Length: 106
Image (cartoon, rainbow, N blue to C red; front, top):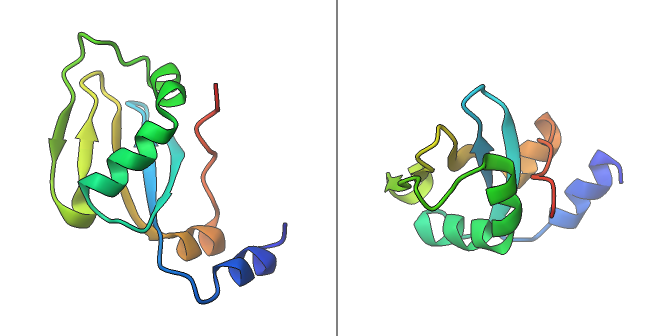
């Protein structure tokens, strides 16, 4: 699908915000987009692909995850160097600037 086609699909839709998984080495992976900025939107999007996030990050039950921030500054530190946070971009921005690779699905 071309950039113009992707942007056309967003026409007259609610703004969606990009959620990214950050590795300790600086890699960034796209979790998804949510219309609900803040903890609820971030957690719902992450839970939807939870098994894939666990496989990518290697997070275990012994890691202590910690949530911080609020609205669009929400951040979930997974306790093993990985973090999930809003990127500060909308879906439209991401399409125009270049989309990140998606978290590989399990």
